[in-house]
Every structure is written in structure tokens, then in C-alpha cells.
Amino acid sequence: MEFLSQTWHWSIAGFLIGIIMLVLIYFGNHFGMSSNLRSLCSMTGIGKRISFFDWDWKSQRWNLAVVFGAMIGGFVAIHFLSIPSNVELNPKTIEELNSLGIDAPNGKFLPDYFFGKDFYKSPKILGMLFLGGLLVGFGSRYAGGCTSGHAISGLSNLQLPSLKAVIGFFVGGLIMSYFILPYLLK
Amino acid sequence: MKLLKYVLVGFMFGIVLTKAEAVSWYRIYEMFHFQSFHMYGIIMTAIVTGVVGVFLIKKQNLKDINGNVIYIMPKEKGNIRYWIGGIIFGLGWAMIGACPGPIFIMLGAGFMAMGVVLIGALFGTFLYGLIKNKLPH
Image (cartoon, rainbow over all chains, first blue to last red; front, side, top):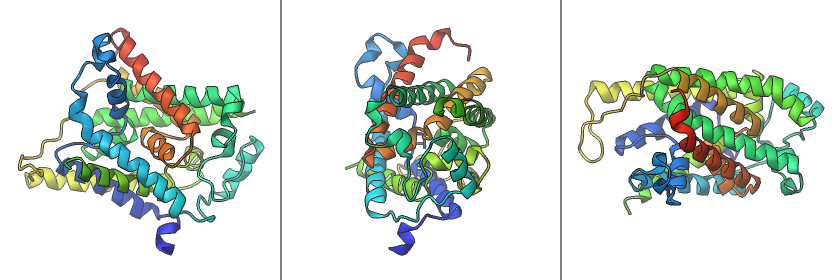
């Protein structure tokens, strides 16, 4: 259990993620999480009004099954396979975050600042959670994929469009992390 | 029952991403500030594993579980959609520290605030569908 509870080494985790992608290819499908967001939108029947959602989402039920499994996996890992020494960050990161008002992890995966029990009491936090989600949802559909579809699947298949998207991910991430987030947090 | 194997793959994915802490807001911040190799190591090892696997699949003309020769569809050519869409995605990724996989995984783990992020992501997807034809791709 000790092996399971400690933070997994990046090489083991990376290898297993690569294997998961290959297993989905072997099953005759592909690895990509964000297209589930399109499926979930389409399930509401909105495809009658907006053609982008008028597609055979039922052929993508397998991917919703992957999401369902991932949610259970997350539940098991957080509640049964976590120990307080997890999320051992660079001390410099903790110090930096502290100056921005973000609580240290101390074994937590997500900061209480955003994801604590009182998140719904602050309009600012609710707004940031919603806006962050909106950018992720809009951006991944515009770019035609997210970290799984472009960074892992696309680059594994040496796709130039995926390289452009992944560079975009990092440019956007750096702009947010260095130039916008500090002002939003203060 | 056909879907069960996908639930199992998803289960593994949820465990691996959580145990690697790739679902952690903190790890994403640390990555974008180049203060740890951890996330870069994960992504690069996954890609190297994938490149080798995909190369072997193509070279050996391997068949999938249904007996069909595996064909991996290439991504559509284009520029604007990948650069601009990518940047928009990155802005959101660094802000809430979660991409679509972790949004679902952490919601499953019981973080209710992720529900707000998911609603936002669904709305963003809806918005894209709504104005898709007006956007340069």
C-alpha cells in the first residue's frame, strides 16, 4: 500500500498514460477527454438548433464510460490512496503562492482558496471557476482537442497541428500564470 | 458489458492522474513557473511511450480488438484554430489548474467546486458550437 499511496514517479505515471492511450487505440478508438463535453451538450437535444451538436454522439458512449471510470478512479485515489506527504511542491512555489494568498497544500490536491467548502459564498471565486471552465471548454473545442487529444495522442502520432495547439496551451498558460492570475488573486 | 472495459480503462486513468498529482492545481502552477520537472516528466514520458507504440502499430500493421487494421486519423490541417484555440485553452488551464480529464476526475473525488468548472466548460463548448461558423479556423 505504501507504494500506491505515495506520489507516483513521473516516469511510471507517464508510461501508464501512454499505455492507456495505446489501449484505447487497440480498442478501435482514441484518447481524448474534451470531446465528452460536446457529447454531454448534445445529449440535451440542442443539436436540433445548433448543427455542431447534431452528430452521432451515441457512437461516443464508450468515451463517456471512460469518464465514468475516471471519476470512480479519482474518488478511490483521493479517499483511499492518499497520504499527508502528497503534493510535495518546490518550497519556492509554496512561498510564492503564500504571497498571493493561496494556502499551502499540506497533502491537499487543490487549494481551499478555490475549491474549499465555502467556494459558493464568494461571487469572485464562483466567477473564476466558471470563467476558467469556459475558457477550457471553448478553447479545447476551437483547437479540436485538449491535453489528452493533442499533447498525448496527437504528438504521439507526430501531428504538426497538435504541436501548434500544445505550444498554444503553454503560451496561454504562461500569460495567465505570470500576467493575469496574480492580479485576479490579489 | 461492452462498455465495461472502457470503465476499467477510465478507472486506471483516474487513479494514475490522481496519484501522479496531474490533477492538482498546485502542480499546474508549479509547471507553468518551471519550478519542478514533475509535470514535464509525465507529459514527455507519455509522449515517448505513445510515439514508440504508434510507430510499432503502423510498422507491424497491427489489428485492433475487432480485427481491423488500426488506422489513426491525422489531425486536420490548419493554423488559426490551433494557435488561438490553444492559447484560450491554456488561459483556462492555468487559471483553474485543470484540463477536461482532471475536471471530471476531481468532481468524482467529491470536489463540488469542480461542478462549477464543468458547467463553465459545457457552456464554453456550447458557445463554440454557437459561433463556430463565424470563427476563422
